[in-house]
Length: 277
Image (cartoon, rainbow, N blue to C red; front, side):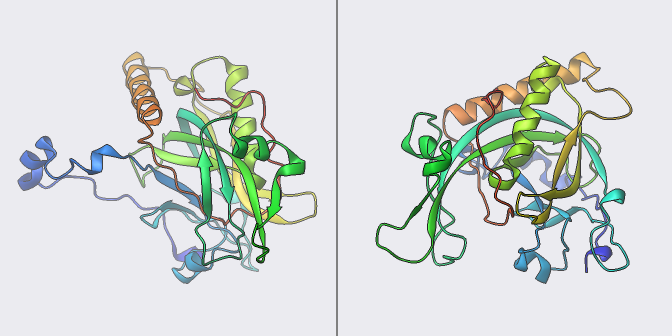
């Protein structure tokens, strides 16, 4: 299972015979109109499809490619050995919120996202930010409940990850909302633009108020090495990336996909520091 998965270094070298077409970006006219960053996913205890592919709880995987990033070490009983989990440095490039109306996780015949909005004054947002209005029964009386949630999304560049050289998406909602909120607090405290920071990321055990435990992202300031971008040219490139993603977001061409595999019942209440950067 998971202990057979190794960190991989994909062959990113473009064959010589493709270079001319690549420079002209032949065939990418439609693809460039929408951008969907690869999502850095943690395999959860309920991720049946991922388990069937040989992944285990706590493994980090790039979706939708299904490419392994880091396997979670295992204790003799097969449980995650969080103390030995891989740590990656990363730089947040662009942060944004989205408010979503979610179908019941047990209603597999329905899409996970029933409706969505970027407007913090929308009805979806108002419900997501009010614990008393965060859930409601289906209007037709069918089984399950509709849930409203605030999502904190982070486009990030992993600094020392051999699996990809492209920006990835980190998304935090429900039981993981507090992680995104804490990240925003760290950034505000450090004052520099997000894309000037270097932070650390690893998988650790998260627990909710009823005692459920699941693997989630732990984010902190690195214990060793620089914690801010040190090179002016690199900083300028990251700033350009930030502006590009902001433009895509403003034009509603930045596409975000979510999956109903985050365990826990975090309150999802917005932190005042969490905002679009």
